[in-house]
Length: 121
Image 1 (cartoon, rainbow, N blue to C red):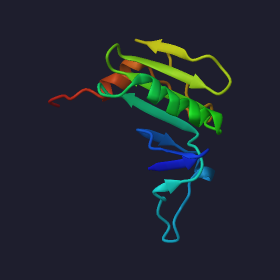
Image 2: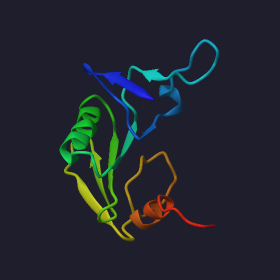
Image 3: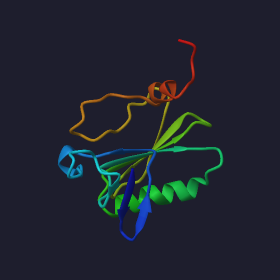
């Protein structure tokens, strides 16, 4: 899904929107292009990506209204969490991650990275 705001378009790996912020087409489907930032943006750093470019996308989102951003780095199984107006915080292992307050969810980096592993079963 493309998000266009603040003079740029970004395509987050995962974009989370509050129900009230979801744009629907006339046919009742979720639009492919949103003209507002996600409430929570999640980026998974790929080996070929430059970290500062990805962090720049998260910071752009925060500047225009995103409340929470995650940068997942599989090299060290860490998640750098960005909140609007605050210093980023690095989470590893069994640290309890920050999520949007209206979402009842308790996650750790270990759990998130376990989801990203390929397994036989």
